[in-house]
Structures are given as structure tokens and as C-alpha cells.
Image (cartoon, rainbow, N blue to C red; front, side, top):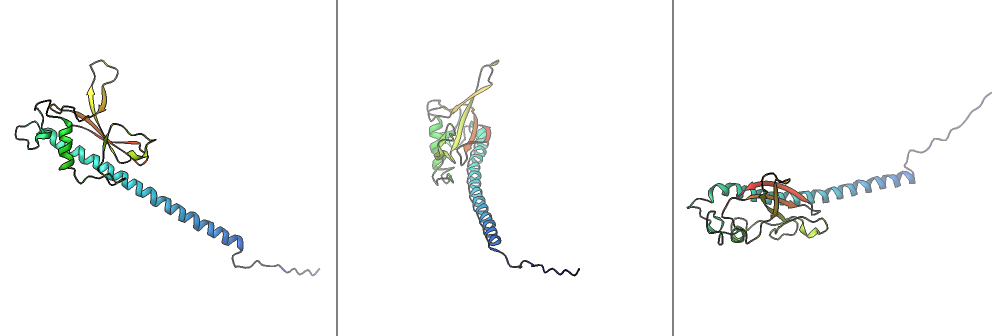
Length: 181
């Protein structure tokens, strides 16, 4: 019973199937890297938009305590003035010309617009700023406050409660903060 078997050992070189698998893995890794870079860029743009909103919150918060004094230098944004001349439109013009003249929407490179809501079906709203005034409802109401867009003709002669947010890449709302102005 002398049986000798010769076994054929497979070669150590990669086969065609091995090379196809390696190429597929390299392609998948390259695609994941590319998609990750795109997602990172969009996240950076959203973060820059959020910083625009945070700059507004900071300015409103700092100004809120000062704007009712007689020595307040920015007359367009001063409080306790004439309700007909002390309007948000005049204050906004001043802010866009001075305090926030360099503020840009990172998604389109233009100055951010102040809008009343984000709409996921309108992708052109990415990076825009949501600025809403919060108005308290009478005591006992089911809803404690209602929000509406701060219009140019709205008087700023009294303190206002504001809610600030931005629209992200998908035009979904990202709330930044509530503040007093």
C-alpha cells in the first residue's frame, strides 16, 4: 500500500478574482473618503452660519442693557424713542452697514438674509438667518408665546424677546439661541 499522492499547491500570486476584489476595496475607500470630505465641507458651512447667528445673539445681548440710555451712540437701534422712528428696519440697515458688514452666508458668499422660516424644499435658504420676535400670550393661554418674523416696520422702542436660528445645508432649522433686545 504504497500510495503517493502529489498535491498541487495553489500559487501564492493573486488571482484575477483577488485583483478585482482589491480594486473594489480601493474604490470603496476612495468613495467613502470623497463623501466624507463633502460632508465635512457642508458641516463647516453650517458651523460658519451658526457663528453668524451667535454673533447676532452676542450683539443683541450686549446691546440690550445699553440701548435704553440717553448716551447710546447707535440712534437707529436705541430704545425708548419714538415708536414711529425707532424701527427694526432702521436698526437692521445700520447693522448691515456697520457692525455686520463683513458677515457672509458661507453657502452662497452673499450677506445673509433674515427670513421667517426654513423650508427643506427650498435649498436656496441654506445659511440664511431666522430672526423671530416672541410675543407673550395672555395668562392662561394654552401657548405661552407666539413667534412671528421681525418686520422692518416693527417698533424696537421697548425690549423684545428674540429667537435666532439658521438654515442648514438641507434648509432645516438649527436653533441658535433666544435672547432679549
